[in-house]
Length: 640
Image (cartoon, rainbow, N blue to C red; front, side):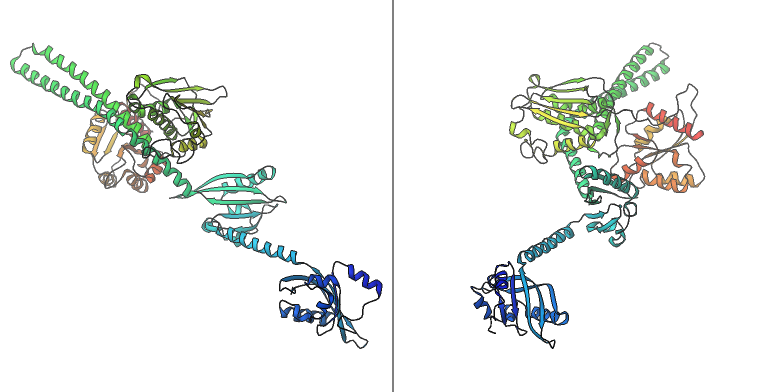
């Protein structure tokens, strides 16, 4: 038999010649006994004769594969679906799937191998690309700092990858097989379970979640997506940095607003302050004159001085009334400025929108008065849902923008209008409009984009309107703009109406009976403030004044007790918060007696602490009537 061997019978040859598979018969040492044209074409040879001159061992890309193939066929007498890489005539690779058997003689010795192969190169390329894609995907997933959890239809975790959140969840090996409740905290587990059911019927469900520890808060964005078969994919992203950045941007916008309003605020303070100084000095001279007149009258026994003294006292009373009015204006201005500059919490409740608008107008009115006339059209409004300080941020920003759209010097020809009404859909609608330069049509669509501004360099961060929209979105509100060059601009804000107003802080009902005289300790590091508080209180209470919180702690150590401890918050040695913590630990019965009085809190920790305790906080400057009423109520509570 030649290298190609004698051909099989005619019918068989014809069939093999046209099969779309490579057919071969070889000797045990690799020589070809037969090969069809399809096999020659697969391997890149021009004819069967060319292929027959090649030993099959030379066709293997890896000689070890020939050893494995021969070992398998020797042991089992056949090979099935044996995939092997071979070299074509031009040196390129081809993957063949081989099915072959050993042909034996009467004594059982192998005399030849015969088999058939098919080209599976594309399949192997696809598998190789799939493995590469899986590797890239796995590398991508491993690089993501988010935590990823795959839950089955039974709501048990099938796979977990914790990324950068390993400290927030149980180890990944413990997550597998666990339920939502075993992996997440109670609130998030409940939300994820509900979201998984919702995602199964609709699209992905997004969740904002916050976990609160004793000293820190962590924020998470969670996305729940349904998977085939009723499972759920839960992706958890640490949003703390993003939330902190957003808060920083909001605070930056507040400070930018405060900076742009500084000149106007100084004007608002200096005008009434001039009245305070002038009227106080005048009243002092009148009182001195009354004293001199009284001394002269006593010395001379002359009644003619009575009318002169009476007139002087009347004028002194009028002057002091003006002092109080001017001081109240200063207090209102400072209080409004503080509400803009201080950070706001995230708490949402029922808000009296008229008060929010009036505060914003008070802060910005001097900024407006040199540019335009301010027009109010504020109807009686229902309470709205939101955060009062954050809403003040929105309207201060809109009013500042309205003012700065108008050049100074033509106030009688321009107008900034604030209108507010209840809309037909039950929402509250506020419009802030101006007769300024307007916004170019190309810029209107981008006006709410972060860092986009139409102001000249140095006059804006480009975050003001983006922050406004973010604040309004967080309380279910909306904002739109309508503007055209030369025709002014109108911003329209829609706010949800609150169904019920928040309950006020409970106080004792007013009664006509005589107030109880209490024992009051006043702690304030400013001696002038302590003296003023003592003058306000001493006619109705027994008052002890000190500049040191430690002296009150010492008094409590000696067994003394107070009905009210009026304590400043910010003090250089022992703060009001530290004092409250010490008293709470040592003398818990006296902790409710502490009433804070504050001119401003400088740290976020202190703000959170004061918000979490039930003690009353009075803001400086406090009017005598307000102080006496609050102290009297506290005394009554202490005596119950």
